[in-house]
Image (cartoon, rainbow, N blue to C red; front, side, top):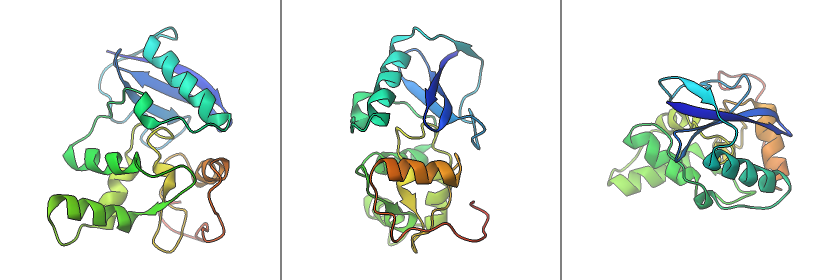
Length: 179
C-alpha cells in the first residue's frame, strides 16, 4: 500500500507518494510515467510525517533555498542500473547541468567498463520516479539541448532558471522524440 498527498507548486500540482517511511514518487500532473514504478493502490494521507517532510522540503526549494537531497528518506523503485544513474543525479549541484554522456562516463568508470551508452542513461533518467528532488531536470544533451524531461521542456526550463543555471549555452531543439 502506498500513500500520497498533493502539493501546489509554481509548476502546477504535484503528487508525492510514500510507502509510509520513504518518498517513493514525486510527479507533475500529466507527467510521462506518472506512478509507473509503483504497483498497488495509493491512498490519500495528507498527515503522514514523511509526506509533510517532503512538502516542507519543496516549500524551501521553491522559496529559493537549496535543501539537500539527503534530508529526505528516498526509496525510488528501480533496478541496479537505474539506481546507479539516480545516485549520480543526486550529486549534480543546484544551478549546474550534466550531460547524458558525462553520466554514462561515470557509470562506466564505476563499473570498470570502457564505455556506457548515453541512451541507456537517458532511459534511466526519464524513468526517475522522484522528479525535482532527484534532479533529472539538470541533465542535458551533449550539445546543450534541453531534451528528455518527463515533466515537459517548459517545466525543465523553469526549474533550471529557478536554480540560476546559466541558460546561455542551452536550447530547445526544433524537433525530436524527446520533446
